[in-house]
Structure formats: structure tokens, C-alpha cells
Length: 242
Image 1 (cartoon, one colour):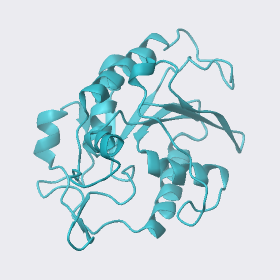
Image 2: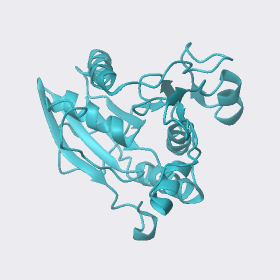
Image 3: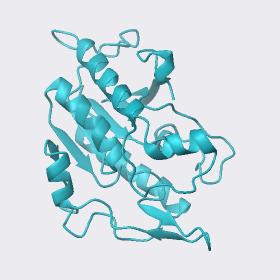
């Protein structure tokens, strides 16, 4: 399996933090900004133009732009679904949402007077069907939303990442499938730790940062895990790197 981790394009919350250094006034499920929409479109065009032709090369770490994706999965958070939809449309591929690819913490808002973090419902099935009709939804998405639970504590993130990776390996591990995950920057740290046996990021002083719409590639072959590259944004104009 060749695994491509794509961080979603710039969200309203990303822009809020970059502009103010604060999360005050954040959305529980932010949309893409205008910059984010541009990033997603350029990312999608890059993946389309660099799709390659003929049989895909195996274990070729030099072919950094030979994607030829076979599967696209995304988080159910709006910023990830919107980014993944742009990619799926450009590649004329199906898009499947997963309810285990969400950002750490889940869907929540902070009570600014007490600091308490309260879980929120998340998007409803009709919301996704209206705004992202191309996206195949899991059964856990209902008219009551898909989250509907408390804030995810940090000690639950690593086990979730391990379960996700085990499922992907069970589905794609013994193949040359080229799988894209459109997910989130904080969750990437847990997936990376699960993939290469790093300490749990919840208790580690080390943190890996990703830019919006960036590309990271893992190769899972012959019971080995290769990190081919991380946080690639060379396909974006410098003015759109966030």
C-alpha cells in the first residue's frame, strides 16, 4: 500500500488563529476560506496532471509526482470533505468518508466563561447529501449528526490511529493500492506515531507540523514502513502556503 496523507486546505479556524493567535470565536466545524478553496483546487489539479499513465511503478521513491490514486478517504469534518471533494471531482473518482479520520477532540465548542469543552452534533446526513452529494457516507451519519458525544480526550487519539491503520492495512496492505487520506494536522501526529512506532504524541514533547493542503507519503511494503516525504507544498504558489 502506498498511503498519501493530505491535510485539508485552509479553514476558517486556521485563518482565525493565524490572524489573531487565538481560538476565541472558533467554529465547531469550519468551512474552507477563499484561500483554502484555491489551495484545494490547485492540489486537485496537481494530482490530476501528475496522475501518470500505464502501469504504476512499484517502490519507486523517485517518482514523487506519480500518484495514480486508487482510493480516496476523508474525515467527516467539513474542511476535509470539501478538500477531498475537489480532489475526487478532478480525478473522477469515488470519495468515501470515514468517521475515524476526524481531528483530535472531535466536534466541539469551548465555553468561553468556564473553559469547558462541549461536544456538538456534527453534520447531518441531509447536510452532506446537499453540499457534498459525491461523498459516500458511513451509516453512523444520521439526521441527528455524526458526532453527538463529548470532546475526545487525548488518551483516545493514539488507539484510534492504531485501529485506523490496522484497518487500512487489512484492506490494502498486501496490494499496490494508492490510498489518499484527507484528514487533519494534529491527527497526523498520531497516525505517524502508529506507523513508525513513535511515542504517543499525547505525552511526547515532539510535534510535527503540516501546512494546509500538504502531501505526505508512506510506503507499506514487505512488512516495512517507509516515510518517503512529508509536508510537500511545492505545487502551491508561495502566496498560498499557509
